[in-house]
Length: 312
Image 1: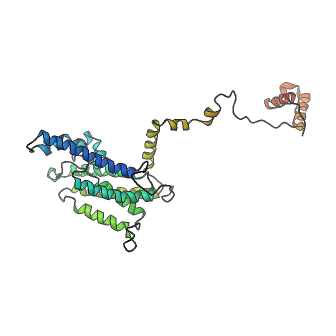
Image 2 (image 1 turned 45 degrees about the horizontal axis):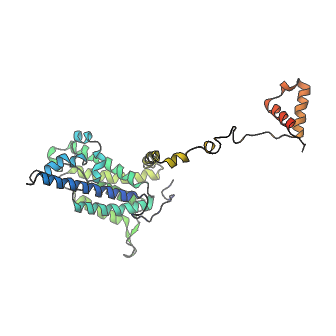
Image 3 (image 1 turned 120 degrees about the horizontal axis):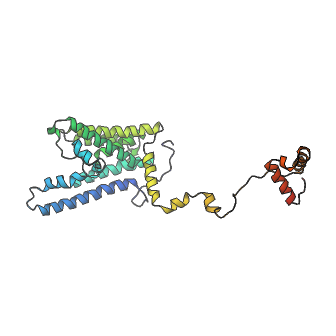
């Protein structure tokens, strides 16, 4: 199916039944609130405040943020997915969620609801993997950040993907006809790279990886390969395991409507005509009797004997 051959409701809101964009934003916000709660508990445990951040990073943040150390990251393999939902402070949370809503809304408006989450996950895993691998090749002093977290790279992937499909998609139409999407994406990319710590080269590589992920996702989609299909099929299969209506819908029609019938619901029967009956009788007379007939001819003869047959 081509990108334009889709059926979706572009009127996104918090009232839609399944809105992947709202789910992604909600997961980030819930994660932020949970981390803030545990950080508050940490302050209560260390009233002086000296060891608060160290304890919080080592015992709480480390369980969901991605470590730049390969061994640690592999021992907590789930952090290759969870780190993108971790926002360190409230301003980062607000900024990232606004950008995610902006580009996510446009991406869904163009491609539909079933490609946003797969692209987000692809960018999360690949960017995290590149970050860890590049960090491993650098000297230890370049690891300025103890943990890698935030959804900035994933947002860049979504922005590039949407721009690859429709670079002239118009925003703010009241401003002299609107602003093209590629301009907004360029502004975001400049801000994203400008605010990246210069002493952590791995962060730049992870952002470049995210941008390439968004581009390749759409490039392959145009070539006929939908990278989101297997994820969506897996999701549908898992959800249907707990949906009894789906199991009933998959029952065969024969099992549903003919389960009490003694025979098959339909059987093909040869047409019985006077000419056909005469040919069977001639065969019996010339060839040696009833046993020389085929099963079909025997059935026709039995039908003729049971019916008050009238030739056509």
